[in-house]
Length: 67
Image (cartoon, helix red, strand yellow):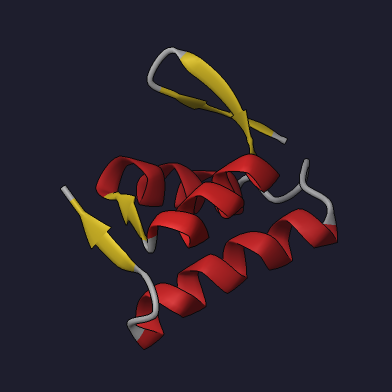
């Protein structure tokens, strides 16, 4: 699934890798992930699990949300 980030289309897999590489995500990225998750009728189970993993990592403090 593609999500708009600024003016670019980024795949969920690329975003996942980028977030884990840096250790943080922006508030905008977090909101986009939440929006994607709420539209899960179009998502595969793997895409839902990827977003759930990121949200879990945020809750556990493994990833930080920055402005």
